Length: 383
Image (cartoon, rainbow, N blue to C red; front, side, top):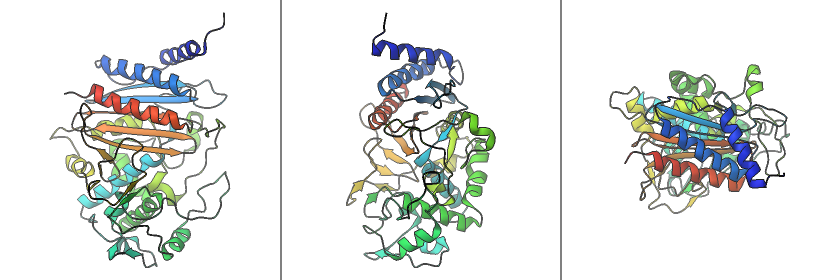
């Protein structure tokens, strides 16, 4: 007897759950149940090739994987699966800025002109100069992308170079006066990464590793997968379902969207962010990194920041949503690159967080994932 499509999908999802154990402490069985249930519904509704759904609460974690990591593979996604985190990399860049500011290496209001170290006069508008805080809070006025020459599909980021960025800056690309509005800009983060490297006197990747990744034990968060990582790489898919290649990450996009990571590393990172005990290591770091620096109120416009929910304020990479009815204060960030969609939401005041990653560009699926993630954070947050 032939199963109906919905029943067939349910059977697939339940098989996936059985095949992939939850990760974390068994004591929080409610967290495990919530992750498995919500992940199942999300997988059924999106029909993406592969999906990972995870959550943290008070130091404990739960994780569920569905589908397959790549076409032709029988491997179900798990905590060790590696995938692009795309623009969630921006939050890590904000963390580097936080660390340098705490050490007195920079001030958030420093002019980019004084920190970039390039032989170019940066544009200004209405008497306002570009500052580091404008870049990290998406208030730079720069366009979304650097104008670049066409690149080969096998190396699509190769033409985004320092030279291309300087050429664009000389044309005065500012769309509004810095700090007066918000427009999602990868270009701005490209420049921020270059400035942080210049301030530190070493490559951005090395600064990130020393100041953020190594202290948190994130050994599988890298800019380019290592040869031994190949068997666990999650393959992205385009909007038409076709597989997309694994491509190199150029130095220029590291801050804006260059990182790969694993579910286990992300859960470890999220747990560090929600540790709000006064004695916890890195308390000052978190205090700065979670603060709101630019509120929506009074901005001339907000473009490209509401995909995870209405942006109420911008932090150092985080998009901040203020409490609303049953939803707690949420810091969130989304990402999409090379056929991967990812969304992370944490509620530091409640000690909870959740994320999903799907390996297909699926607009409806992404929105469903965002809602599921935000709703789960609200549901498991202590009142």
